[in-house]
Image (cartoon, rainbow, N blue to C red; front, side, top):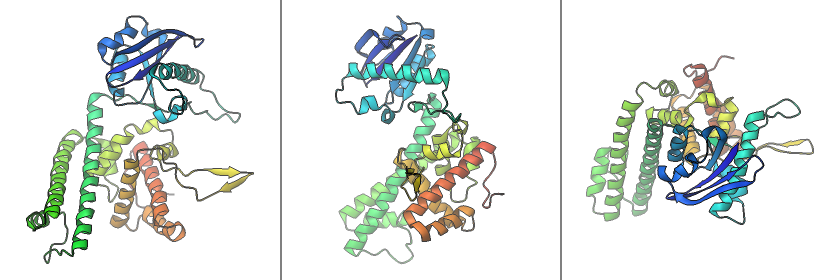
Length: 355
């Protein structure tokens, strides 16, 4: 068995090929990051005798698709987990490729033996890996991200306009309740203030783009059962439901609700010393910050829409004990557990779950 580490960049890449004894057999330095460049591997090594590891990057999906279609076993490791690389003092493409090949051997051994600890519980893999996505799934996932980004951008400009108007003591006409309504935007674009005109125009354009992308998403995901299930949660609209569904993708990949909570970056840190457990620790922020922010927004929207739900009551209790910010994180964790349960057992949302 050969273990191959690939240090992939936008235009060039470096491969290190090791044997079972972790001795370098061959190196391919600065080959093009395209199908012709990858033939240095496909021409010289049999797919059945190779185990390839690359680091997550913008070119990951392209590289994954090429090698998988060629019959090779290729895995992609999360960059944060590959500490021999991201915490190394000496860092070159050749060194990184060699360390990736060593990591490939380590993951291969874990996957082959699936070791357990002294209590019989499975030991976690040495690092997290990314699942390969096909082109259509990748496009859908990216579109949901863009919709959420536009939503955040529009909300940011809305706050900026409100702050600017407050500082300049600019008042909206009577009955103009929301700044992001079309007639309010038209009024602000015609107001004799260039800065206010520009901000209003940008906010209007983000709304237009968001609506266009949402319409395209509805055509793509109109038959997606996960999106329909998540939309049964009060306060979660199509945009948020599609974002969560595309981020989770396959709920069966998560063994339990806690693993999904960790994926969302909402698991509390554990601090224990001398048999003393320290509570009130902050969450482990190892996920995309936009994903956590979407969960917090969903919690706030859900509490407003369904004040009698178990999550809303839980959040209200936590606010009096630990404050608003921590209470939102705790309620967000509950919401993610609910989503895992709904998607796993294919059941709609229940405000008061059966005990």
